[in-house]
Amino acid sequence: MKTIKGIQIAEPEVLRIIDMDMPELNEKNNVLVKIKAAGICGSDVGIYHGTNAAATYPRVIGHEMVGEVVETGPSAKKVKVGDRVIIDQVTSCGHCWACRHNRPNVCQHLAVRGVHIDGGYREYMAVPDTDCYILPDSLRYEDAVLIEPTTIAIQACSRAEISAEDEVLIMGVGALGTRMLSIAKLSGAKIIVADVVDEKLQEALDAGADHAINLLKENLDEKVKEYTTDAYGPTLSIDCACTKDSLGTLIRVTGNAGRVITMGFSVSPTEVTNFGITSKELDIRGSRLQNKKFQTAIDLILDGKLDLDHKISHTFHFLDAQKAFDFVDSRDPSIRKIVLTFDD
Ligand code: MN
Ligand code: ZN
Image (cartoon, rainbow, N blue to C red; front, side, top):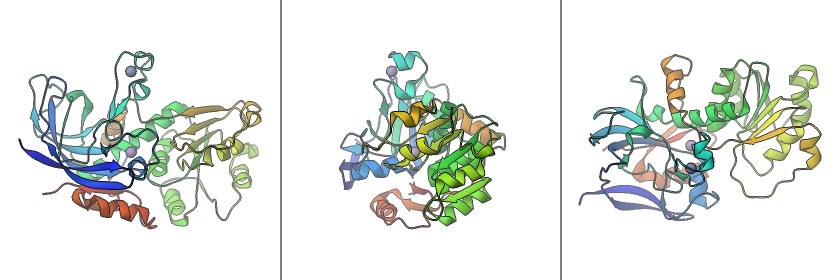
């Protein structure tokens, strides 16, 4: 049988290149995709370091994967050979309470590609045609990887029920926060960003943020009052920093009747008080993965409302994944988004 190469996290801190069987099509997985690019996400780094509580090992990681359809089975309707596609990372059971209530992204038996089942850091994947979404022609594979974090942002803004009346605080403007900014802005809301890196804050301002706060140099509590109407504080806070303390911080600074969206996977305890939530009647809402948001993201690109071109900062060949993950660990300030490529 033909074998392919994949990048597996055998156990925390152990990354290896493995040989895998070439995937075969069947009734369910009726499309064979030759992977062309795959993003490195914070959660991939978390699985590598053993800090992602959801992950199981050994695991071929990668959940931001795009490629070309090279074979289809008889039941495949949605895509054809030659189509350029991005693959949905969520697989769900279809019959649990969450699935019956259109929340398959938090299915009781959720299996996420690259987390609970093998993902996209391999040369080929066999997946259902319904999990494939056709890429805009103009978008390069490397850039198309950013559709996935965009869907995460669309999900968070959907969970937040964002509107033009909101004054939003986005905590952290790294890869996720940057995507969040571009989606949140589409609502017409005022956007304040906070981070610890001046360059990232400047880029966020250039991308349309209304105000920027450097958490190392400025007092967050004072600044959000200064930047919001009647010193109310943000009506919506979205945690794109996902540190141990960020949830508690956002509960503190968010205005009365506001919403706080959490996206982190830290299992470290953080101090949250009843008073902090009850006295302001805050809604604390988790936002996990995304719920069928790929077509929404692609339509925004096709409509000219979203530009993903040339936003990635670095590429590595996927067989150099160790180098890429070491580079992530270097915390080099030039890092925005790193993509693995699969060119022969
Ligand atoms: Mn991701
Ligand atoms: Zn389910």
